[in-house]
Image 1 (cartoon, each protein chain N blue to C red):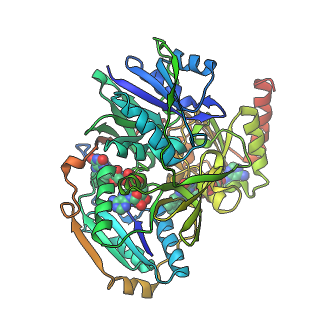
Image 2 (tube, rainbow over the protein chains, first blue to last red):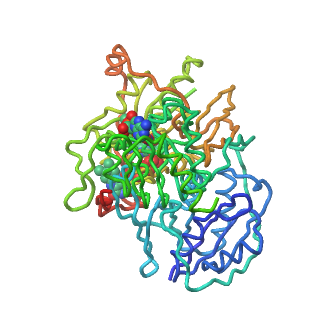
Image 3 (cartoon, each protein chain N blue to C red):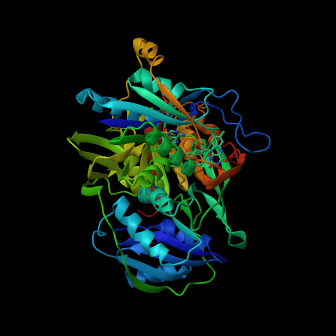
Length: 320
Length: 233
Ligand SMILES: Cc1cc2nc3c(=O)[nH]c(=O)nc-3n(C[C@H](O)[C@H](O)[C@H](O)COP(=O)(O)OP(=O)(O)OC[C@H]3O[C@@H](n4cnc5c(N)ncnc54)[C@H](O)[C@@H]3O)c2cc1C
Ligand SMILES: Cc1cc2nc3c(=O)[nH]c(=O)nc-3n(C[C@H](O)[C@H](O)[C@H](O)COP(=O)(O)OP(=O)(O)OC[C@H]3O[C@@H](n4cnc5c(N)ncnc54)[C@H](O)[C@@H]3O)c2cc1C
């Protein structure tokens, strides 16, 4: 059995879902959770349900907002005061940013963006995509402990942990150390929707959307489904949507339960970003569009006719 | 001012990926190698800085095989001044690569002011090297940058995070920055640029020269395989 620390990032005071995915998958190991900042008793109880033994709330000066150095220093100090075999975190914007620094502080290895793993005999062995998901490989970590692992959100899925943890919450003093790269301000994006990389349902528009205005029909469908809207590169390059919405090799890699591609041809670079979606629905006027070879459900037809009809049907189905 | 740009060579995005029979990696014989697309933004940013600071020197650094040095030559054809190559087979892990890059930068004898890299290499998408390099050099870092402004020794950068929000950082040089799409529009190498690049100096080091050995490996990959096919719909 391995001693594991799972770092959880907070989003509006809530732990990110990927933390629970990781905890569930760690059933059988001894897992603690560390958070920088404060969380309520309900959050601690949720973490305990998924197996968390101790919940360490790291607090200190200059830790109220994220900085790569502050988080790295505070967590490094905390981890040094304990003896963990593994440190896990979500491969979120934040996790991807500071985990390599943190691992490097221990001269240790990091397996990044892992999509599945086992802990046989308390030893980590993972699977991660290469070449934007065009192939998979096994990843193992060697060298000094602790070993570091980042997990792609939505990849593991929620698995209940049969044994709840004690969920003992305690404060720990955090030392941010010297912070040179400091956030001065945060420019919020217009949308408050779930980010593409964490979305459970995605509705994507391609070049066939013709203009930015037409994306409204996708947003209407997304609102009904609680989905996030994405775009192909052709749509982004044509100025219909910002780059933050791009799915694909040079955009976001996504793994939602449901991916609805509207007027997207299915170029290899687009598929690279969404091929691990659980169910793929494609709407395209061209029956030979490559997207259909990857789709679970294909609809041949004009998206401008089909999308509004589907939105109405979803409304009825979901009682909205 | 000394600017370093880390560039990696990756298979062209159109490449059909075929795992080798033994699963140790992918077939590389017919691969066309290109400069990692995100590294083009890093090279372009270095050249933009040089445009307003003519005394600046831009060095491109790469760790990898010597049989094809396309990425370094391309960067020099775009306008970089010189290059350093650490000769290695292409199977080093991120930790070893970062250590080799640090060694190469130190070998040049130039004290870095700004080190630019891509936010990720599109072959393995590890997103590790720039941050590890920064930690090893004891420097601050900001990754996934989409905006850059230099005022004297202060850099103001915008970092893109979930949902398209932007974190605005202010940091003094020296600093390591990992670039994202949207930062700038990379220029094409001109024909005279390509001719000139052939004569630009390229230092070459061995892994031993930069102090990297097998003991530096931290991550092992094996069992390369195609993902399970989805049944056609
Ligand atoms: C290095 C590199 C990186 C790249 N990275 C990415 C990336 O990250 N993401 C990405 O998406 N692409 C990427 N691409 C681009 C990719 O190759 C394609 O050009 C792009 O995905 C095409 O976008 P599209 O499917 O929207 O447009 P198109 O290929 O033009 O397809 C439009 C589709 O809409 C259909 N259509 C037309 N009208 C209608 C209608 N009324 N109703 C329904 N269907 C209709 C057409 O039949 C067609 O299939 C990259 C390319 C390169 C070279
Ligand atoms: C044939 C082959 C076999 C491989 N086998 C293994 C293996 O068994 N184990 C293993 O751990 N890795 C292996 N890899 C290497 C691994 O795929 C990556 O090269 C390594 O993990 C570093 O890249 P990264 O994805 O972390 O870079 P990222 O951190 O994603 O790259 C970000 C940026 O760092 C810079 N950068 C990254 N690499 C370099 C470089 N080499 N030179 C200059 N700048 C760079 C670039 O600016 C890049 O944009 C293999 C690679 C190949 C081609």
